[in-house]
Structures are given as structure tokens and as C-alpha cells.
Amino acid sequence: MKNSVKRAQKWYRNKLRKWLRQNPKALKSLRRFRCFDSDKKSLARGLAIGLFFGLTPTVGFQTPLVLPSCLLLRANFPIAFMATWVSNPLTVAPLYFAFNRVGESMIGQTVMSENTTATHPWLSLFADASLQMTIGSLAFALPAAGAGYLLIMCLGPIRQSPNT
Image (tube, rainbow, N blue to C red; front, side, top):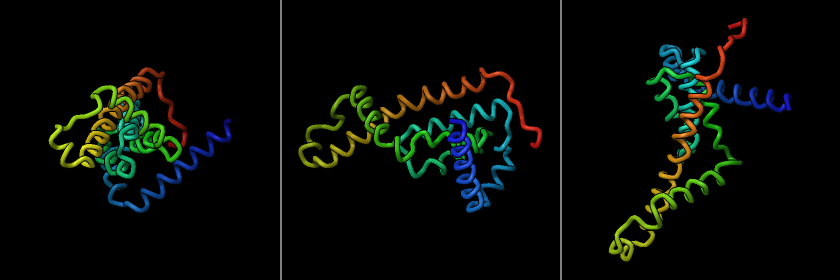
């Protein structure tokens, strides 16, 4: 178990380093806005941002959304980046299915008028599914972000490694 955790940490670290090498302007901004700080509030904000965007239907756009959020809120970017991987290729299908079901139960089957549905049935299907998925994802993302923030804030003191 410990080896698999270390492998996952190494994989995330390498993926983050590769992305930062490919985006030097982002790295400069992150350093200037202190998005690599490891104080408790910065870590908590980073986890909340990462969980929020990781649990919304924004696959493919998560990092471009996380980056300005971390800059704006002075959150820890590496934690936020890693937390977005809560939705990964293995979990995205079940998550999207759950988002759609929860959204459907919250807002119902249809949200478009009957006239629009009769003339453009494909538009109705797309709009209903998109709105249901978005509402359903927010039902997951907001509590998860809040819980992630509180989890870090309620932990004991954060110790830094001696070589930082």
C-alpha cells in the first residue's frame, strides 16, 4: 500500500513538473503570487479549489480554471492540481452518470418549453442533459470543496520537511 501511494505521488509530481516546464509564464505567476506556499490556509484553499473543479464537468479545462483561481485566492497550486484528479479516466463516467441522475432528481426531466421541444428535439435533449449534469455536479462539488477546506483547517499543525 505504501509503495502504491509513493508511486502515485511521484506520478503526480512528474505530471505537474512537466506542465510547469511547458508553461513558464504560469510558473512565474504562481511564484509571484505565492501559490507554492505550504501554510495551512493556502493548502486548504488549494484542496477546496481542486475538489470543486475536479467534481464539475470541466474535464480538459480543469487546469486552466484552477490556475487563475489559485492566483486569485492565493491557494496552493500543486494541491489544487492534484485534487482535480478526483475525476480521472477511471472515475469520470461514474461521476458524470451520478451528476446527471442527481441533477435530474433536483430539476426534473425537462426544462425547455414544449414548442422548442417540438421544433428542435435534439436541442432539448442536449440542453436538459447539460443543465442536469451541471446542477448535479454542483451538488457534489460544493460540499466536497467545503469538506476539503475544513479537513485541512481542522488538522493539527502542518509540519514542513527540513529541506524546504
